[in-house]
Image 1 (cartoon, rainbow, N blue to C red):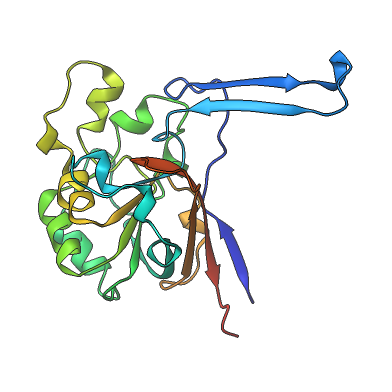
Image 2: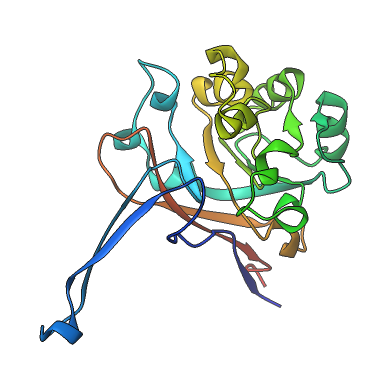
Amino acid sequence: MKRIVDLSMAVRENHFRWKVERRLLRNYEQGDQMQLTWAGWNMHSFSHMDTPRHFDRGGFTTDEVTPDMTIGDAALVDLSSVPANTGIDVDLVSQAGTHIQEQDIVLLKTEWDLRESIDKPEFWTNAPYMTQDACVWLREKNIKAIGFDFPQDYCIRHYVLGDRVPEWGENTTHVELLCSGILMFEYLCNLSEIRTPRPYFIGLPLKLADSDGVPLRAVAMENWDE
């Protein structure tokens, strides 16, 4: 049976970490003939895509991102058994990712969105995280993009806690993958609902010019060749 799985979280107000400014420019209750909403938020909030410019001064921006870079065959890597506060190392990724092929979009499934609420600091402070050797292994597989359902760098917890500003090199996936031109899809959800190890992924980032990141609507498609 053909299935479409929505992998994007809703952009909404009142999140403790991500601030969304939203107001009605036109309003039926005020006598206007239409409703017109204005909204603004950090491009690296909620489900979004990172481009290399985010961590590389000379990296490309959204201007160079074409649909073939965000759409294609995907490999769902099941890491759902990884405990909280555990590094996802090369052994774990290579054992779970034997089906990864060149130019795949890799989706790392920890089901963290089911284990911790993204509305709480613990979503970041207790999360599993990627190690450098795992990132290097993925980069050498020549993948074209990667998606996460968890805050994938250990140092992200320090941004949330506010206890210190991490060094550039601590942002492991950004340094090892993004700076090498591998697009990153962050804060995906519902990877647990994908039933096949090789779905078709459609990531549609907003066509915002010359940006380091941009909101993303992503879906996984199953059995579409039936």
